[in-house]
Length: 337
Image (cartoon, rainbow, N blue to C red; front, top):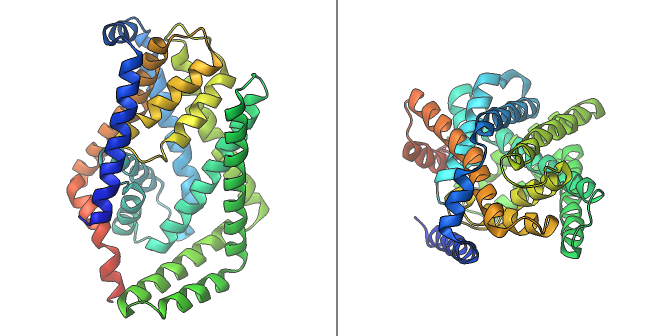
C-alpha cells in the first residue's frame, strides 16, 4: 500500500471517528437503543426491497451507457451490486474500478468504456440530486446554508455536464490531448493513458442524441425517486413527520456527504448529515430520534446490498481480496500488450 493510500485511509478513519464521537456525545446511548427498538420494524423489508428496485433501474441506465454489443443486463446488475459492496467494506473506494474489472472479466467490456460510463453516471447522479434538492427546498423553509450548498452543488455538476458534452462531441480532441500528455510519461504509462482515452472517447459517443439523453435523465430521476422513497418510508417507522420534501433534502445531502473522506461504509459522514439536516428541517425531532433513524436507514441501505454482493463474489469464485488486487493490477498488464 502506497503512502498516499495510507494517508487517505488515516484521514477517512479520523473523520469518521470524530463525527461518531460528536454524535454519541449528543445522544444518550441507552435512549438511542430504545428508540431503535421502538421503531416499526415491519417497514424494514419493504424499504429494502424498494432499494433493490432502485438498483435495478440504475443497472438499466448503466447498460445504456455501455457498448451495445457488450450489454448483459444480469452481469451489469451483479457488477453494480459488487461495486457498492466494495465501496462499503474496503478502505479505499475501489468499487468503480471493481465494476470495470468484473465487466472486463465477464463480458470483455474495455476498461475505457466502463470508466466513461461511470463518469457519465456520476454527472447524471449529481445533476438529478441537485435538481431534487432544489425542488425539495421549494416546499420548506430551508436554512441559509442549505440554499448556498444547493447552488454550489448545482454549479459543479452543470459544469461537469458541459465538460462531458464537449468531450462527447470532440472525442478526437480528447485523444489528442491524452497523446500529448503521454509523450511526457514513461512509455508503458503513456500507452495505458492513450488506450484509456481512446476507450473513454469512443464510449462518450454512445450518449449522443436527444432521445437517449432524455431516457438517461428519466431513468436517473426514477432511480433516485425510488431511493429517496426509502428515506421517506422509514420516517414512518419513527416519530418523524413523513414529508417527502424533507426526505428528498435529507437523502440528497446524505448521499453528497459520502464524498467526504471517511471509513468504509461512510460511517459518520452519512449519519451526521442526516442528523444535522433532519434536525434543522424538523426541530421537533430530538437528536436521539434523528440518530436512531439515521442508523436504521444506514443499515437498510448498506447491509443487505453488501451481503448480496459478497454472495455474488462467492458464486463467481472471487473474494474481496482477489477482486481488489485484480482491480489494481488489471490496467497495468494491458499496457504491455
